[in-house]
Image 1 (cartoon, rainbow, N blue to C red):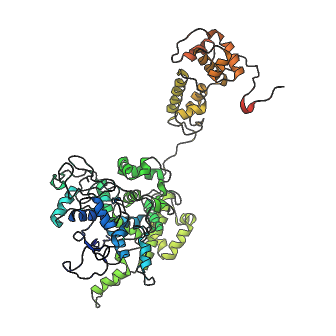
Image 2 (image 1 turned 45 degrees about the horizontal axis):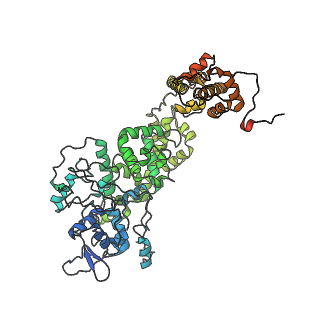
Image 3 (image 1 turned 180 degrees about the horizontal axis):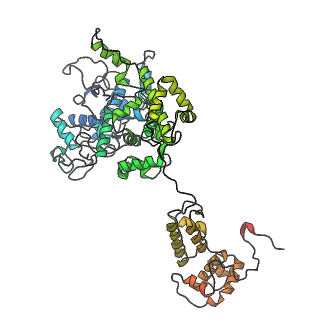
Length: 614
């Protein structure tokens, strides 16, 4: 596995320092203002978050308020330090011994989640080590900006509650003499400790007071809670997490974070995703994937609760752009948590993940590392020379071509080499150019390929299995509308389908025969709707034509004709109950398809359909 270099000290860090007084190595000494130095806490420990360093500084220097610490270190009012990449890092590193830009980059890589953004969001650090670039004071100021902020950081930088493992707390007290906040516990989606397999906590086990407060330091590891209890006094959790998926995810995230910082561009990452999806059998024809099956397996693997905690889009059911993970144009803008979940779902192990990224960057197999290893063995060593990065890239490209060809072969029934030339001409051309033994290899592989069988699609001539369910829903909706004692609304096909609800304009007659039949039975004519409105107005006390027209909302001439038709109802009080209006219409022999009291009469059309008389 690619291992990460030991993190630099937050306290004196990169750059050459002078030996002074009682601090011979000048470790942890910040130059603040003119002629003043601030000595921080002991040297940094592995996997420590920046908020932990600042918290320990606050405790060691016995500051009475958090604002005093912020002013002394950042010369700024309190701001969130629990962000994935805390702001104003440059204000801190300006007072550190050594080069401010180098110190800022070192803190980003060792104390924040910036390394994960280098992998999944394509964020790059500026190359100030280039021999052709001179560093000047102006360059340093531009690079530092208002925080870590000249370095292009992702748009979505989330602040989350600080998570703590009680087992790690006790182990750190034994190993280092003090506890600290682990950076790997703050990775989005991590809810258990990768080392101890115990759940992480975000609040006091006794009083349930949360460790994290808005724009404040987290001091729970070193000071007593409001309930006067220390975290170190609580018993260690004995029950380990039974969710092996969460444990595996926590280890995957911790291994990625502890690896040597690597920049992976969007093309490399997306191609790695696609190759792995093809190997797992999610590819369809061409470069398309079975997104529904992928997401179904993804949801079953993690469970909806964990995905909802990590992915806001999933939590809010905004899924239209969810699969931009495999689109290199939008992949850098995908939230970090979704990238991590998806990468773990596909690869499970970091070793396998890096194999798909090695063709573009392989720190442990680079020429510089190989030269170092060969020199360490002595000049007389007979060990064969390591492969160069160019040969590794060539070999990886050959493997990729073979995978692509075989993925296509599994989609073609009784596939032959001729079929592959027909469907994958360009890929076959590249394979033949790079592999002289491609033909024998293909024959051997094709002999063992079992064609993939696609599930039988339902016939468009068969009734949909939910046809009866939808028909019953339409019938019940219509019954409720007709039985209502409120002012009648028109029962149309569109209204009924929206009330179910149904996402289509109308059910297909072939696939939904029962639904279509019920829909035609329940939809009312215009005159039936007018009659319901007029009867409702009369039963509510309207007896004059104008009052009936105003209360019912029916066009005046039609309302006048219906008032005369239902004149027998006037002055006869009727209690309004469910189905009262339908019962009245039934006594008059009126059904849902009624054509009015005088079908032959031509009424003027209101609105845009109006035509002038004469």
